[in-house]
Each structure stands twice: as C-alpha cells, then as structure tokens.
Image (cartoon, rainbow, N blue to C red; front, side, top):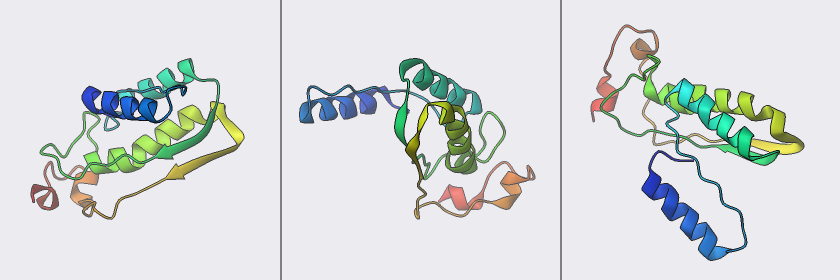
Length: 128
C-alpha cells in the first residue's frame, strides 16, 4: 500500500527482483480518508482469500493541511482511525493463527487536542 504510484511500482519491482516467482500486489490509497481506507480494504478482500499478517504502519510526519476530508486531525486519522477501520474490514480473511501488528513512530509530534475537538483548524506543532 502507498499513496504514490511511482513508489508502489519501485517497491513491487524490488520485490520481484529479489524473487521473480512471487506474487506482488500493490494498492494505492490515502489512509487519511475513511472512505479510501474502506475501498482499500475492499480491494484486498476482492483479491485475496486470506491474510497471514496485517502490518499497520501508516504515518504522516508533516503536512500543510492538518484536517482530513472527514474533519479529523490527519495524524490521528492515519495512525489510529485507519488501522482500526482497515483491521476491522479485513478480519474475515485474517487466519486464526494470523497476526496483526500495529506500529507507531517516535517521529510523530504530539497531537493537538484542540484539533481533535474541532476547536482549531491548524496546529502550531505541525507548522515546524
């Protein structure tokens, strides 16, 4: 998964160069959007009958727009909401002995509570 078709193609090509007999699937999606996250999950469900592991490792370090189309703080959306939505949608194909791994980044600045509560549209922490 990624937001950049060029980076997805490069990652796919790298994996195929390491093992040309492997099956590589790539998905373009913006996890700051709840609807895009659900569409991503549906694409995975349509293409795969099972998952052995789901690794939630989305993150946004800096962005000019701190609010998502769903009116969430963008970092909260990609680090909290998206992993929840994606995991919930994909649970039907995660094997009983499968794994779900949630990662976070120490590089993330603290979430501005005023953004979460809708009292502010920008954050001083994100303007650095």
